[in-house]
Length: 246
Image 1 (cartoon, rainbow, N blue to C red):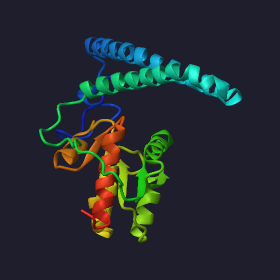
Image 2: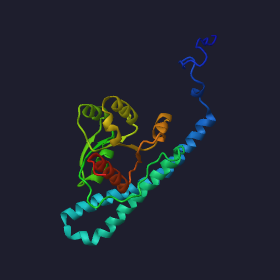
Image 3: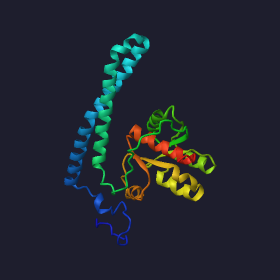
Image 4: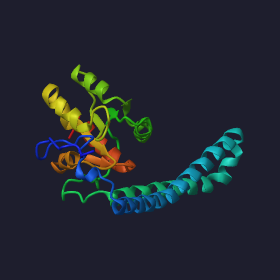
């Protein structure tokens, strides 16, 4: 049977009969991608194993200490070492992921090298991230210093902000399936523009051209996993600004 005639205009969208050229299977390319994926998996698995084993040890040992508090002084050095190992493992994964990302436009990254004020103002902080684990981790880092609200739905956060609810600082994930941080800002600019300067974006990697351009335009952001000091300093700065205490 004769092959189907291509009636698409030049540059038209792919169809089942006429897929885009890159959709054809290229054995060499697939082998190259497979080798890359295997290498990344190997590099990630080792530090992840270290993190997992350290956390399991901490969980089990804390249960023993809860049953017998007298164990704490003797076990404290091991607890600290386990925490240090977990931190180093997480940092290795973070550095690996950053190394896989395209080079960032100079000046786009936001770094914090100041120190937090001795008596920071207590503020209201909103965390918007579709991953509940990330939201809880942000809340833990800010616990005791601020009143933290965690939402996993950017649509809910947007509705509450458009309805007039306000927070001094907003930590918003950049890449979310329901609405991206970029979509959230776009809609807030039209409906509640006063909120936008209070936003800091959380990013595990700007993997799209739109996201890279968005950050390169100067949006304040923090890379995941977020360093505690950088997070607390940035939130303290936003709270002072919102309360007019700069």
